[in-house]
Length: 287
Image (cartoon, rainbow, N blue to C red; front, top):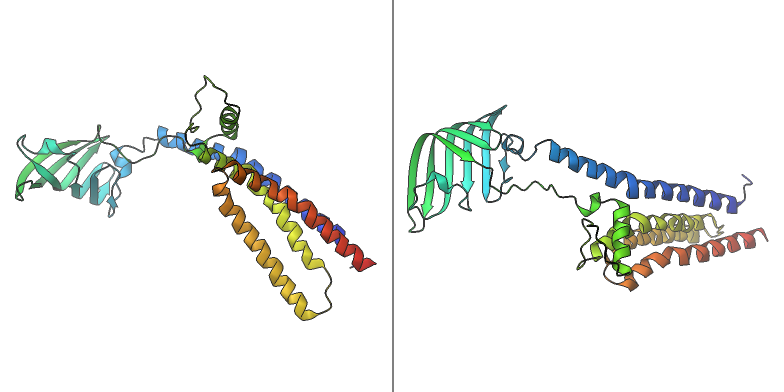
C-alpha cells in the first residue's frame, strides 16, 4: 500500500508497549488487589462453617482427617450422612477406654448449627487396636467442629500481597535493612519466592515488545517462496520458544542474582539489536 515497513514495525512496537503497560497495571495493582479483596470476603462470609463446607452428593475433606458425604441438604438439615474419621477427631463418641484406629459414623439425619451437627438415628463403627470392630447405636448425638482444623486457606498468599509490600521486602533484603514493620509473605530465609513474584509482575511483560520486533521480521521481502515459508515458520518458532523460556526462566530468577539479572537484561539487550537489524534490512530493500 506504499506505507514504509519501518512505520508498520513502529506501530507493532507501540501497540506492544501499550499492552505492556496494561499488563503491568493488572499484574501490579488490579490483580493483587482483587485477590486480596476476595480473600477478605472469604474471611467475612464465614466460609469455614460446616454449612458452607459440605455439599450434597459429594465427598468433602474440608476438615483435616475427616471425610464427609451427605446425600441431601436442605438449608441446615442434611440426610444420609457418612463420616470417616482417620485422625481420632471424634473420640468423644466412644467410651474412654476405646483404642480405635479409625471410626465411621453413619446417620439418617442431621441438623447443622454453625460448627455443630446434631446427628439422629445412626451408628458409630470403630476399628480397635486389637483388630476388632465396635458398633455403637445412637438416637441423637452432637458433633462439635470448633477445635478441628479446616483446610480453608485464610492467610494472604504471595499472589495477593501488594506490589509495594513486595518492593519493601526486596529493599530490606538487598540493603540488609532491619525494619520494625512486619511484612507478611516476606520470609528472610526464602526470598526467592518474593523475587519470582516481582519478576512475574514487572519483568515478564518486557518480553512482549521483544516478540513484536521478532514478528516484524516477517515484513522482510523474500523473492524465493520456499524461503519465505521457511522464514515464517522459523520466526514463529523463535517467538514461541522465547515466550516459553520467559515463563520457565521466571521461576529461576529468584534462585540466584545471575538468574535475576539475566532475566532482567535479556529484553533490554536484544530489543535494540533486533530493532536496528530490522531497520537496516528495510533500508537495504529500499536501496
